[in-house]
Image 1: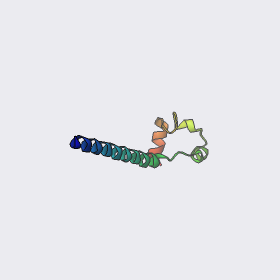
Image 2: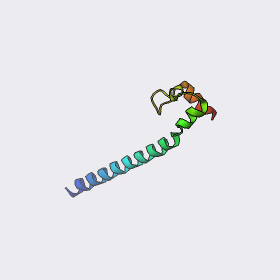
Image 3: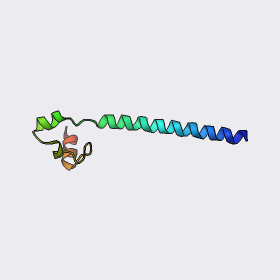
Image 4: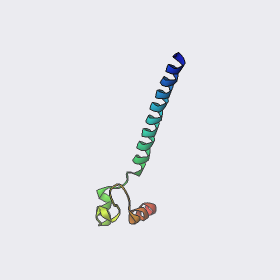
Length: 69
């Protein structure tokens, strides 16, 4: 019985650690992609929809812009 309890605790700890690691990775990845600002649209004299479908998703024009800047 004690062995099964220990296994359950280890499984829960591992799942929690995995969830925290995944959340941290998502924050780092999303943080690196947060480049779009109203200033860019103003500078380029184009609406946000010129580069975005549903922000923050980029359309083809947005992907080209990101690759060249």
